[in-house]
Image (cartoon, rainbow, N blue to C red):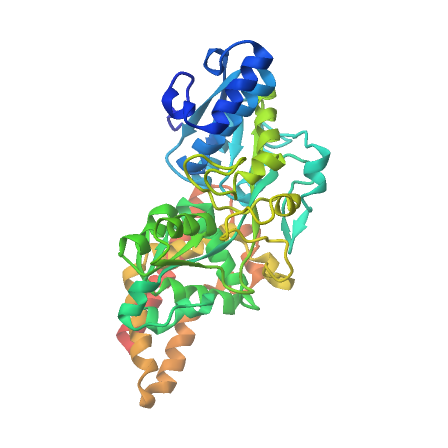
Amino acid sequence: MAVLLAAMTAWMPGCRGKDRAADPQTAEADRQVRQRWGVALEDLPTVTLVLISAHNENILDEYERAFRLYHAVQFGQNVFIDRRSVGGGGSTIQRYLRNVYAEADTSRIDVLWGGGDLVFHAMVRPTERHPTGLLEPLVLAEDVVANIPPELNGQRLIDPDHRWVGSAVSGFGFLVNAEMLRRCGITAPRLWQDLGEARFTDLIELADPAQSGSVTATYMTIVKSAPAWPEGWARLLAVLSNAKRIADAAGAAANAPILGDAPIATTIDFYGLMRVAEAPDELVYVSPQGQTSFGADPIGILKNPPHPVLAQRFVDFVMSARGQALWALPVGAADGPVRTALGRQPIRRDVYQRYAGKLLPSVVNPYQAGAAMAVGGEMERVNFGVLQRLVVAAAVDNIDDLRRARATLNRLAIDPSRQEDYRRALEDFCALPADVDTLEKMNSSELTPKDARSFDQINVAWRDYFRTKYERIAAAW
């Protein structure tokens, strides 16, 4: 079992007293606490909430501060949030929790927050020890349910049994260092398929999907922007083959344009928008028009939490209109963050009206007509887990051979006398393994066997398939 590390936060009672005194929100909360509870904010008793989250420190700091003040005024208690880390993003957290619950009735953690909706879909699946899944049912206020539609363009925003609820809306796009591209004389990309063009060879920073659900979701968005599975895979493979590097983490990939390591990086929206806020004169975040898939980034209470009442209160706060506005307001706004603008899309529809004209200009209302990509028909059946493994086999484990094969294609493409060779080589390059060349096969139970040995055999076979193919293309042409 992985070892949990408790991250001590800066907002423990008694810490940074001078900072809080200078913060108008804290000063007002202290005034209300003295009036209602008869003591100073710092003198209230402290209770602990245990949280595991894929969110970054900026998000966790701002929400802990805001929840602490809210809870102090409403309930007369300070809250210390004990943040747990297992050294990875949503996919890593999911694997850890499922392993824990395979052996125990509780994880000793209260709240799971962030990491993408597919993490939460996995958490509600029944297990042998927990036939009702690994999340407790939530008590959601009427105004929460009234302002979150069940689905958005085919993407579920709230669990039918209320075991999780979207706490924000995530979109996927790419971050561009426009100044770097200008210096290279390259026109900036607008659509996903642009990233697969030869002009972006070795110019794109990507990340390993096995380490992050948001990275896999980005690749899923690229695939679903095409009308059919083979075409979607070809579109994604073209982007993968233009990679300068495949980073271990999504955040590291998003850093490349701001550091000048690569002019383009695919990313979830809030990583991109955070970087734009740091360098607005150089960076642009692009949500491809008509090709942006919005999905829920949920919150839920884990099975048998140690502090169930406090866990429900935290969910209540995050899902309140005030808690939702924290995602999208600028620093210094009445209900906004104190240190860092978060730049994410609230999931409650009423927040966009209630705070109209006050939200950050980068925040996109996903409920506006035409804002989201409509995914229908067979493309709804693209298998997230299988796609993740295919990308690892095709690109992460074979990046050098992939790039050599793509270089061969680029040479053939510009030679007028070799267009038939180019057509044949491209067809070979885009071909899928026989067991995933249709969506019916992709969703076969044979591709997700329960025993680890069979699972690994499939992955190795795919890796060898792609390697052999890339070597053949590079050698034959």
